[in-house]
Image 1 (cartoon, helix red, strand yellow):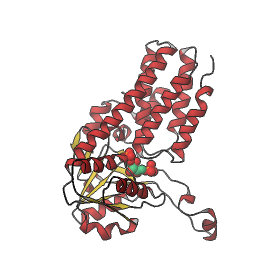
Image 2 (cartoon, protein in one colour):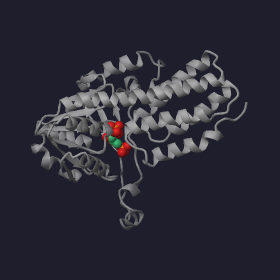
Image 3 (cartoon, helix red, strand yellow):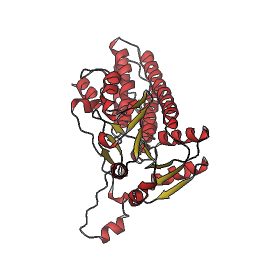
Image 4 (tube, helix red, strand yellow):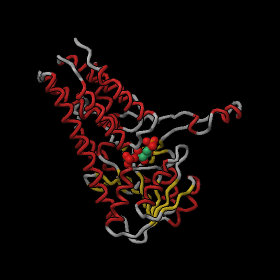
Length: 333
Ligand code: RUB
C-alpha cells in the first residue's frame, strides 16, 4: 500500500491547529472547516488503491475530530462525509471514485450549512420587532446573520453584547454589529442580570442541542437564560440541525471542553496566586425549560421537539447514518 496522507498532511494539520487554537472558532465555522479539511485530503491524496485512500482518510478524519471536544457540528460534518465515502468503498469504488465521493460530500455539507444559516436568519428575523432590545452572548455567526437580516428588513432594534470572558468573543459580535449599523452596547458578563429587566429577547447560538432539548453554548449562557427566566424574557436559540447531537439519543453525555488556565490569567499572575487552581470550562448547559424556542432551518421548534429532529435526521437505530462518535466506534470494531 502506498502512503497517501503525508502529501495533504500540512494542510490538514494547519486546519486542525487553527481549530484547536480557536483561530477558526464558532460551531458552524468549525464544522465547515472540518468538511473542507476532508476535501483537502481528497484533492491531495495520491493513493493508488482504495485501502490506501481509506487509511489516509481515516487519519485525516481523526486529526480533525480530535481538535475540540464539544461542538457536535465537527463530528456531524466529518461523519456526513465519512459515511458517504465508506458507502462508496463498500460498493468497491476506485480511488478516483472515492476522491470524488469525498469532494462531493464535502461540497454538499458546505452548501447545506450555508443554506441553513440563511433559512434560520429568515425565520429568526421574523421574531424581531421594532424597538426590541436584544441580548446576545459570545459570537454566533448564525445570530449575527439573523440580526443583520432583521436590519435588512428595516427593523429598528438594538443589542446588548456580553464581552464573554475569557476570550472576549463578544467584542467581535459588538464590532460586527456596529459595522452593520446596528446599535450595540458591550457589557461585562456579570452585568447581564442588571440589564435583563430592560431586555425584550435573548438570542444565542449553540454548539450542541441534546435529545432532551438542552442547549450547550458558551460558558455563561445558562446564567443569562436563568436571569431571562426570572425577568420573563424570551430566550431563542439559533441552531442548524447539524448541531443536534445524535449520540445523546443513546445516553451519551456532552463533553464540556476545559481550556487552558492561561486564557484566564497570564502565567506570571497564576504563579503569583500560589496554590490557587484555575478552572476554565468553555461551555455550559442550558436546560430545555429555560429556552422558549430553537430556530432551525426546518422551522422554529420548542426545545422538547429536539428528539423529533434527531430521529428524522439521523435515523432510529444505533449505527445508522452518521450517528456521531458512536457511529464511528461501531464501525471501527
Ligand atoms: C462559540 C460559541 C457560539 C456557538 C455558535 O464558542 O459558543 O455561541 O459556537 O456559533 P467558541 P455559530 O468561541 O469557543 O468556539 O452560530 O457561529 O455556530
